[in-house]
Amino acid sequence: MSGNSEKPRQFKVAVIGAGASGIGFCYRFQKLMPEAEIHLFESSERLFGKVKTVRENGAIYECGPDCFVKDKPMPLLVAEEIGILDQLVSTREENKGTFIFSKNRLFELPEGVISFVPTKFAPFIKTGLFSPLAKIRMGLELFIPRSSNEDETLAEFVLRRFGREALEKLAMPLVAGIYGADPYELSLRATFPRFLDMERKYGSLIRGFLKSRKNIAKNSGKYSNYSYFISFKEGMQQLFEAMVNSLSRTKIFLNTQISKVEFDGRDFRLLANNNSIPDTYNAVVITTPAFVTSEILPDFFGDAKRILKSIRYNSVSTVNFIFREKELKTAVKGHGIVVAGNENLNVSAVTFISNKWPDRVNEGYFMLRTFVGGGKKSHLAGLSEEELVRLSLNDLKVLVPGFNAEPYDVKVSRFLDSMPLYEKGHLEKIENVFQEISSVPGLFLTGSAYKGIGISDCLKHSFEVAERVAELAKERKF
Image 1 (tube, rainbow, N blue to C red):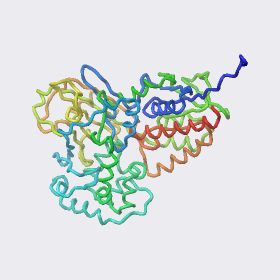
Image 2: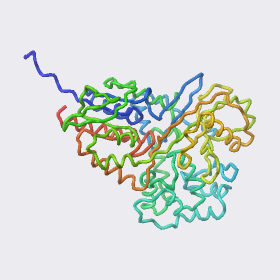
Image 3: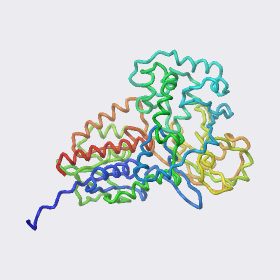
Image 4: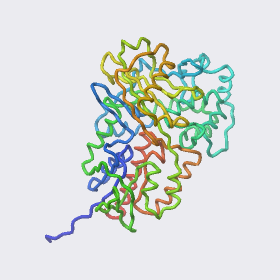
């Protein structure tokens, strides 16, 4: 046997951005190609991006997303694969209920309302949230003809099918919590394609949800014991911590800002903090916000850089409060409150963390979280911490009758320019970007700017990209 046999080539990939998408890609790619080398670059001092859980003094603060939904089960599948299903936690059903603040009153969201679609007759008729005329208008949705539009804004869709009160009292507040955006600016096809498909298939969303309810229950399968909203005992960051702990073939570089990707026709090089990184890479995966990606991409890209730079972003802030229960002096019911779109408040929603999740704070204390910013109120997210606390406390006195407690602890988190706005035509723009990027083999984009902003969406797309990179490596005989 020869003593100077050639060392096997090793596929090397650079991943830019260590949020949910970057970590998701590394996790999946390592499963597909365990011998590959992965370099994960993050410009800040911490991993996990907008997923941020702080554990202090017996409390678990969720600064970013606090859960995922069961009908987008990617986090469930990952948790099962890693072996942390026992760390999943369901919402406290004994406290369930969401309230809508409208016309200076709280109305409980009627049972059977899914997004903005009523599916149970009796609770819908009994609610005082809608005027009698609005109830008739929403019921007439069963007879509204299908539209031939390929895309429209979410607001146009809701107005056309359900009327103005459904838009202002359901769609606007509920969507604000998901996309941090104004429904008048959101593409229906990019954000809620399921509604478009239901209209085309059933002619009515009410009819569609009623017919699909059995399928939803059936598809829950082995996860049927969990609530619709699911988190982890130690917060959402626990999932990504477990994923990172499994990355034995990934080198992580914090405080390393990639300023440019260079391509020589075969391999890639990176500029970091204006200095060249000595390594060369067979593939590069960029997961940064679109406006950052536009700057990082090689200069020979034209339309892709322009389109990415044009994608607008909204800003949101969260304010976590802990109060002493004995000082609340009022009963706090339900999982939270969302504020109707026509109300003049700074806070768009409140989550009663102690009511929604078990074991988030020490006994004798109560935790809640306010949301400020998003859509036309994005500018509020950039206010000082003191001002965000003041505005939140003032609005809590309006939203919760009798509320007048002083906080025991406060934690403010700002997410500036963090929520991509999926405007009409978004999917066509993204398809054009992907088409141009595909002209450079080995260069890939993933992240919240493209195929969904939620944790499940980001994981799903990053996994798909990992499979494509693995296919490329195999084509090149690695």
